Amino acid sequence: MAKKKIALVGAGQIGGTMALVLAQKQLGDVVLVDVVEGVPQGKALDIMEGRLSIGTSAVLTGTNNYDDLAGSDVVIVTAGVPRKPGMTRDDLLNINYGIIEKVGQALKKTAHNAFVIVVTNPLDAMVYAMQKVTGFASEKVVGMAGVLDSSRLACFVAMELGVAADDVQAVVMGGHGPSMVSLYDFVSVGGIPLPQLMSKEKFDELSKRTAMAGDEIVGLLKTGSAFYSPGLSAVRMAEAYLLDKKSILTCAVQLNGQYGVNGLYCGVPAVIGEKGIEKILEVKMNDAEKAAFAKSVEAVKGNAEWVDNKIKG
Image (cartoon, rainbow, N blue to C red; front, top):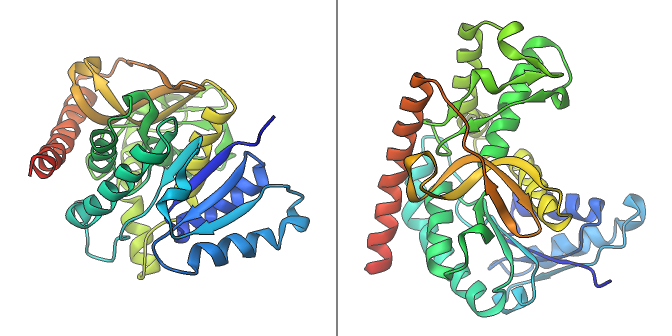
């Protein structure tokens, strides 16, 4: 059976992290694509030279040519300008839209059967733009947000309770930004509902930290934004698709009537398998959570309208 081809558009910190993890997992051969000459080639060769140590047969290549996306099974897009201290995700809107537009046009020409995962910020607007530019079916274009946000919340809950992070299940919905919604009743620890283990007040503290987790790391790094956890989250999504795992993951998907939303991309739980987004799950929220989700959707809507105007332009 032919190996799968996984293209990583953007060979920065997230791209390099994903290339290494994908090689370790042997999910397929990896192509790193970047506009900076030498960087994708250098990172690919560096990992290739370490293959003996990680016991992998994956082949990694680097290129500056979008034509090399041809035949990709999965394309993960991280290309864009990272945040610097004081910048919001939305500050990146104009700069990163131009990059998404170029990548989307290249994908439309060369990789029309690919499952496309967008990581570039502002996430909800960029995945919306990618689907519009490519014209791909919405179930094959998805944004990585809720996977990361839910993982961050699970991390903070585990740290607070002194338990293993992989025993914590968490759901964070809405837009990928300050308006994201952490759901108290949907968190469980080893199958035990979180309300039996933690007060709502403490949970609210952790949910605020989750919403600002990216800013916390930007503030600490000072010269860039998070890359290990976003990279691992995107790989988890790619793995669910490539292995037809039917994983339930919270990610930015196009809503078509679910939650009363039409045509916008927003973070909700969905099933990822070989067809891409195979099912969107509608969960019951309390009134406060519904109101917070509606507020998050409004924030997403504003950026989507900006993209629509840009495309009409």
